[in-house]
Structure formats: C-alpha cells, structure tokens
Amino acid sequence: MELRNICIIAHVDHGKTTLVDFLLRQAGTFKQHQALTERVMDSMDLEKERGITILAKNTSVHVGDTKINIVDTPGHADFGGEVERIMGMVDGALLLVDAAEGPLPQTRFVLQKALSQGLRVILVINKVDRPDARTREVVNQAFDLFVDLGANEAQADFPIIYACARQGWCTTKYDDLPGLLSGETKGSLQPLFDEVLRDIPRPKVSEGTQLQMLVSNLSYSEYVGRLAIGRINQGSVKKNQRIYRRGITPDGQPKVESFTVNQLYTFEGLRQAEVEVLEAGDIGVIAGSEAVEIGDSLTATDTQDTLPRIVVEKPTLGMIFSVNTSPLSGQEGEAIQSRKLRERLIREVRQNVALRMEDLDVNDQFRILGRGELQFAILIEQMRREGFEFMVGKPTVLYKTDEDGSRLEPMERAVLDLPETAVGDVSQLFQSRKGILTKYEGGSGHGSHRVRLEFDIPTRGLLGMRSKYLTVTRGDGLFSTYLLGFGPHKGDLPHRTSGALISDRTGDTVEYALLALEDRGILFVSPGQPVYEGMIIGEHNKENDLNVNPCKEKKLTNIRAAHAEVLVTLSGIRKMSLEQCIDWIDEDEWIEVTPESIRLRKKVLSGNLRSVKRSERIH
Image 1 (cartoon, rainbow, N blue to C red):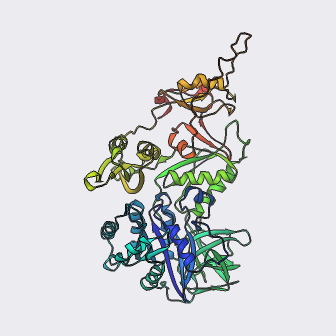
Image 2: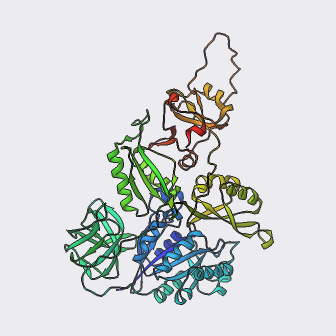
Image 3: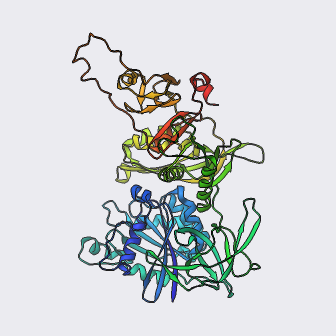
C-alpha cells in the first residue's frame, strides 16, 4: 500500500481540527448511519470545553490505494512541545493560515520547526469566506515568512490551496473563489487530497531489514497497558516478536531491556485496528512494555544504533506543586501524600516532553518546569478532575547567567490584534511591564479600524497580562506570544499593587460580616462558605494585607425595626477562576486546589507569624 505521512500545523483557532473533520468525512471514514460530532479529534473534555487542541493525535484516511496518516497538532504556543516531537513522524505538513488574521506567532514557530526538519509544506489559506478576508495579502505575508525563516528553493516553491474548512471545500485556483463563495459551484476537498498525493513524498525509509522506531507519542489501553506510538524507520515488526527498548535512566545513563510485542495496531480513521505486522514507513502502535517513554528507540537487536532522542525547547517558567496542608484538606477530595503527588507528576512529565520536574529541599514540594501559564492550568485542571487535592504556588521565571555573570531572563514577542480605540490603554499597559513597541500596522490609514501591535517584553511581564488585556480591549482583542530567547534582566516589575483580605479565624462566613467588609475591597467568598485562619477572602483596596473577621454575627436585641435590613445585600462577589488565581497570587501565597473548590491562602497561616506589609512579605 502507498503511504503518506502529514501533520496539520497552524496558530490556535485557524481551523485545523475542523479541516480534519471534513477530510475524514469526505474520505468515507464514517459509515452512513454514524452520528458525527464537530471537532471529532478533540477527544479530551478540556479540549471540548475550551475549543482548543491540547494533545497531538493520529488518524488516517484512504484515498484510492493510498493511506494518508494525519497528525492533528495543538496551535497554542504553550503546547509547542507536542508539535516539536511529532515532526519526526511525518514527511510533509499542511500549514493553515487564517485568510483575515494572516501568519501569527505560532504559525512562525511551527513553520520554523517544519522547515528545519526538511518537510515539504503545503500552504492552506483557510476561512476565505470571512467578510474581512484579505487572501492575496496573506499569501504574500506567508511567502515573506518562508523566506525569513530560511526556506530553501524547493520549500519556498510551495503549492497554495484556498479553503473553507467549515463548509468542506477548497480550490487551487484563486479565480474559482467567487463561484464557490456564492454557492453557484459545488466544491469538495478533493483538490487537497490530490495535492497531498502529488507533492508530499513517500516516507523516507532507512536501508536495512531490522526494526528501528522512535517513540514519539504514548497512549494507554486498559487491556494491554502502555502503548508506544511512532513511525517505523526501517524494517518491520511482527506480533509476539522479541524486541529491545533503548532508553535512558533518570540520571541520563543508557538502558536496554527486551520485551515481547503483545499487540500491534495501525490507525484506521479514528480507531486503532489490530494488525499482525507493521511495515517500514507506517505510523503504528506497539504494546508490550510498561516502561517505554517518549524518545526511546525500539530495535530488533541490542547492538543496533539508536535514533537521536527528541529534543524540545527548554522551559521558561517554573511552578511549585505541594501537598495540601490546609485545615480543610481531605474534605472534598483525596488528600494525597507526597509520594502519590510525585508519582502523578512523574507520569505527566513522561508523557509530555515539554515539562520537567525537580525535587526540592522541602519533602512535600516539587517544581514543574514548563512553557506557559495555560500549560500549568491544564495540568492542574486535569489533576483536579482525577480527584486530587494539592496546592500550587506563583509561576516564576527561569533565569540564566551569561559568561560575565550577568543575569539573563526569557524575552517574548507579544502580537496583539485590537480595535484602534484601545491602542493608547494597551500601549500604556505593556510599557508599564517593560514592553518595547517594535511594530504598528493597520488602523484607519489602512482602511480598517483594527491595529496589529508587536511588543518585545520579558516573560515576567506577561504573567497575568491576558486578563488585563481582555479587560482593556473589552474582550475584542487577540493576544499571542512566542519566545525570542534570553536577554538582559529588565529590573523590577509591578505585579499586584493591592494587598489581601485574610480571615483571622476558622468558621463559616456570615452575610452581616461580609457587608461590613465590602468597603475594604473586593470579596472572593459568598455567605455560608467555610474559611480558616490565613485563608484569603478578598482583595484589599490598599497595599497592605488586612486580617478580618468574616464570621462575625449580629448581636440579637429586643429593639429592632423589622424592615431595616430587608434591602441590604452584598453588591458583588468576584468568583475567581483557576487562571485568574494564577495571575493574582503573590510569592507568599498558595492556591489550594480541590475537586470542588479553588481557594487562596497565605503560606504562613497564623496571623501573628506573618507581616502585613508588602515590602516585608515579598523579597
């Protein structure tokens, strides 16, 4: 059987998963009677809820006598590690670019990785039905991006396809667009299939008859255990064959162990089909080893050369995970010991090569190193849904030192698409965080009321910036970033200028007490909620912290007007989401995460052991 291996890469929300939906439908993957859901590749609950792809996933379609293996990849920069490690499985890529937004930061990141691997790229201009589409201009921007990233002559001579993934059609001819958009002519995705068969090369196979495969992804089956996913680089593998896993130990030493192949699978549409043999060039699944990890090589003998391990870009942020030590631990979920927390984090690090873990001097705490706040938020939410209780600290930036001993910090480029009316407020917001404006495009001078700004800004300055930016642009701004590298340390940055309202006792909150505290700041808790000493119940409207009593009840007297307090109610409570909490907390605070609640607390609970002055709290 003829084979083609491709991945679909793009910036977040440019239509990758929707395109895969229609590729599967038009290739006849689904039976007539099957109920079809939208974004069928987004199988995780969190992916469906947030409308983004988090994990890279495999599928396949048959076009004539050719099987096309397709890998759907995430588009958010925080999950760039997922994209980096699957590049070795494929020989070509479909680069999706929004016809209105044009190439954005993650487009640049994933295209750079694809070009450096020597992949053949097909440019797909998606969403050509948008009223604000500027298709020709976006094609020129994409060509400039290819040249800017050092594409060779063959790569820069890329085919162009104009598509509307949502309606399931595409064309290679720009002049056909008016008829397709008006509905006069019917279209399909056949031109895209034809282009893949014509332009994407057959899988490169190394000479040799003995099995060699690099593990690029992992999955799990309740029946056969851990599954290793990757492309067969050379040779073939049969069911019940004895093969070798060539990995490394935690301290970096080579490790070789043999195991018997229990099951072999290949991808047929959305399911894994059992097979007796996997041939070179195909992307398949091997079961039999519980110890296999991403980056390991599977070989037929223990003397063969191993394939280079997958290398991803280094993390830029760290976050401490801790056992839950609050007075309410164990009441809403499983209060886990440090051993169980460590095991869960190690499992995550093995499956996600973009994450790393460090043991700390404190027994109950571990530091996870990753790419961004969203990546941490997804991990925390997954653990929460598994029933765990734990605490997390404020994300901190990972610094480096240069040869002269000077401190270096990660720098990022923020690309902002926003209404022209918000430019002044947004510029002030980013410049207060040491951002430098490097580019200004669009505006009324170009016939539009939207502007694209680019700022070079320290990663520290982006912590908590997303929610502030959306507030300033009234939810109408687009915000994306990519890592530039490390630059000189930019000095102190303002984070949170307000203090916290902190409960000074254990009990349940009372509406009468909360009413009295409303003038002091913004409340995070409702009446009737359990609180404990050291728990944060609101944001103080001054710089210092304030210990308060939210459990105070009104004294009963015989003299009371019946109608006096009927209309007195709390004016508003800010319900803090997980991302808002990560943005909000300071270095001396924890987020307590349980399956049912997210609470904020001080690291030191006892009021007489901690200072309320910010200068003494934050070093």
